[in-house]
Length: 251
Ligand SMILES: NC(=O)c1ccc[n+]([C@@H]2O[C@H](COP(=O)([O-])OP(=O)(O)OC[C@H]3O[C@@H](n4cnc5c(N)ncnc54)[C@H](OP(=O)(O)O)[C@@H]3O)[C@@H](O)[C@H]2O)c1
Image (tube, rainbow, N blue to C red; front, side, top):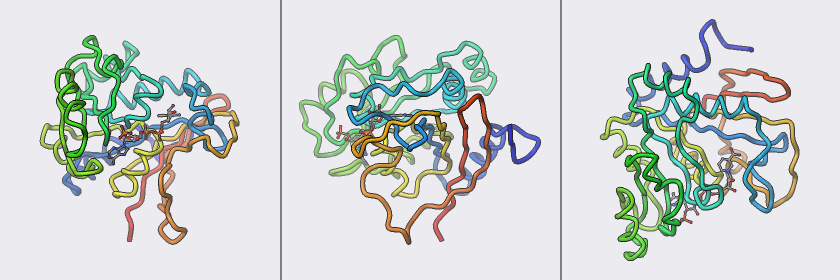
């Protein structure tokens, strides 16, 4: 393990979160994604991503345990139907030791509000703490149906105003937000300068394919506007690399 100092990367991240939270008047936002060596987050056919290891799942669980809220894009919810919870008992115990409630507050971001009502996101077993963040222009009948399943926040006209979303979450006491993709939503947060940290697992696999998505999709940046990162922690487990980057602020 290569760490920047004697402390674990997670402890350092938690400290950074507190500092940024105080300075920025919004929750600390950290992304977690797994990619192949060629930077793909799934195949061109958008199959369920199956290239990361058990170590990556443990790392994901730890990052979830440290979060107050977990956000995903509607594309990920529709494609993968993920179960957004801390899976491992030991990590759940760790979460309790941090003074956090058992259930994460789950948020899905969608402009059109077309979400399958039988998604795991809406499972009762996952607890009632879930929010659908959508737009003022989302069709009323879809929003009405979702209101039976979750809290629905309309924030923004055509797209969800992500700054408002974070402010509202902050008002609920949320200090740490984990963003778990996909590529379109990650890029929307990055474009709005709302990402503080990127946790990237690089798995020893190649998928290739022009249409296979990467961790940051949508409209990219011009060379002059590229986002710069600082490698805050790097660890190797087997053939997999676990990187933690701090996103440097513009200017
Ligand atoms: N390898 C990994 O770690 C990993 C992690 C997560 C996901 N993935 C993969 O990523 C793929 C999905 O990625 P994706 O880029 O297609 O989808 P995505 O980012 O999960 O979701 C995109 C959707 O989110 C909504 N959205 C995003 N930004 C918005 C904004 N500012 N306002 C309102 N709505 C917004 C829109 O929903 P509506 O269309 O409903 O309006 C948009 O179509 C899946 O195949 C999944 O397997 C991989």
